[in-house]
Image (cartoon, rainbow, N blue to C red; front, side, top):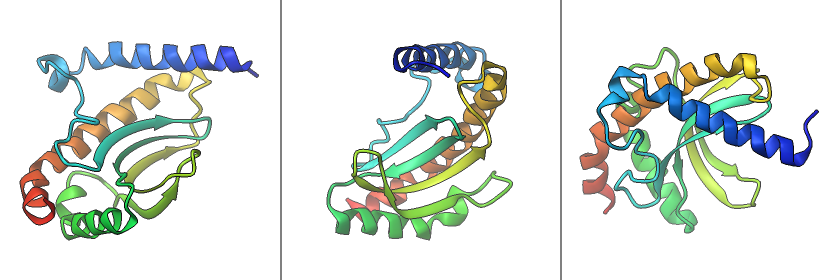
Length: 154
């Protein structure tokens, strides 16, 4: 078991090693910025990574503070479900009401790798591969439908 400070350092090391691993990915090698993440160009829509003691997740998070707006974006994205899920072996998980630890409600569209623990460094290669492979697909799919989303939402 790690102390709070040790866990914080381990998390920091995880993301540093992950960034190094991303540098050798051919699809990312020539990009100035490796991942879109918060710079989707769509207000209230972010791409995110998350790792915990139980799972690794790549997600689209709809985080508008206004519930009606959040749900409107989520419903609009459902129209593009086939395009968003293209390239994935299994359907994405669509959660219209996820509550963060902070208490903020968001909508999430995600893919999860269960039964992994970022505290176990021997699992890092599998976690890194999952994060990279799935975020490449999710990011590309979101950017493919970006113009359509902008036209309907903004």
